[in-house]
Image (cartoon, rainbow, N blue to C red):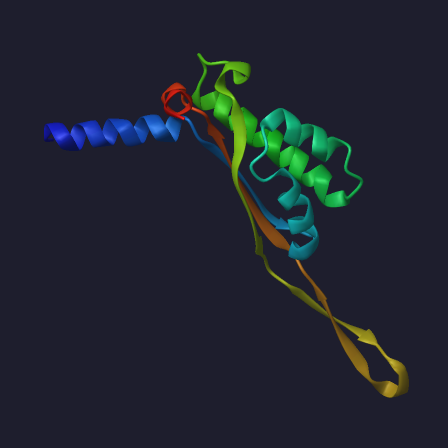
Length: 138
C-alpha cells in the first residue's frame, strides 16, 4: 500500500471512530409523527437531546430516547478510553424513512369497505463528536 493511500485510510478510520450510529427498523408509528419528534433533536448536543425526549409527551419520543441511548452505547464501545463529557457528542444526522405498510379493511356504510394503511418507519441516528482540530480552526 502506498504512503498516500495508507494516510487516507488512517484518516477515514479516525473519522469513523468519532461517529456512531443506531438503527430502529419497522417501528409501528407513522413516519410523519416520528419526524415531528426527530426534528426537535437534529443537531443538538446529546445531553440536550435526551432532556428534550424525556420531557416530550409524544409516544415517538420514548422510542427515540431508547435509540439515542443505544447510539451512545455504540460510541462508548468504539471509544473505550474516551469519556462522553470530553467528546462533546451531538446528533449529527437523524433520518426517518417509511417502512412496510400493513393494509387492512374496515367496514363502511352501505356494504362498502375503506382501506386502512397501518404505517411503520425506519429511523437512522448518527452521533458525531467535535474534534479538537475543528474547534481550534473555527
